[in-house]
Length: 308
Image 1 (cartoon, rainbow, N blue to C red):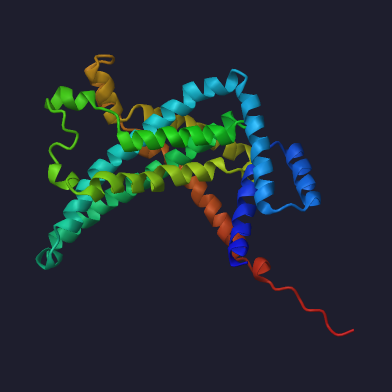
Image 2 (cartoon, rainbow, N blue to C red):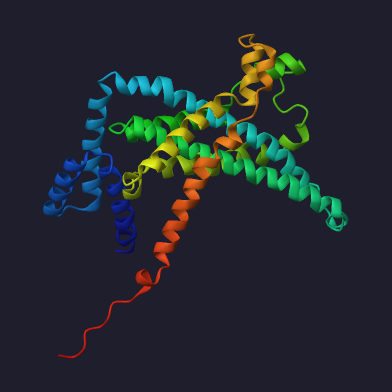
């Protein structure tokens, strides 16, 4: 059947992802049992899913996962999601200016293209910064919660998605502007449903969700990291964590509650510099895989056996 032929590869991919949540020894044993059972992909997925859920619940009976969830997962989920929301706010204004207010006369103006390059470059640059930082956060959570990787990832995604959709009320905005309107003074931009609802969700998926999942999925290459690379990624993780916690919007919120002094609001913005390390690592990994895929040895076809 056509439906079954399309469903089986998807089930096989899902089964592989569920097996990766188990320990290596148990993973091999379960894979061998499934191979001998000759059951359908759906039945195999359901059996492995039940086993993974039981293993996850057993690990959550200890105190370590709760500590990671409270001290690491929840703050990172809130900060990453709100950062993506803040990013979507000013990116929507620039996009609205460049897309919704462009005509043939502006297209012939050099100043328009200068502004398009400047604003578009700012959007792309910060999008890449947030992409790298989200990847680092996913890698950190994967390292801290090896046995609860699956449940930790799902919890972070749920929390960050809720924060991205609902948003956090800004006390600093009400304190400084004396207005509770979150879209002030850019009401015409966010009067459009696309910029108000869909644009933040799209940027959240591209800059937070995708890199986080890429970091959480275990790969063989991540196991064979050399010591210098591990040191680089560890330093980058610390740098990214500090950069996320001292963002201007977060410092303004803390200052508005009179928790920190006013000069702290103007601390140097470290997040773009913190993303340099993971960006170099990701580019290096991408280049290495590209060279392996397009090398003459990889493209060499097997020789056909001649006649006996």
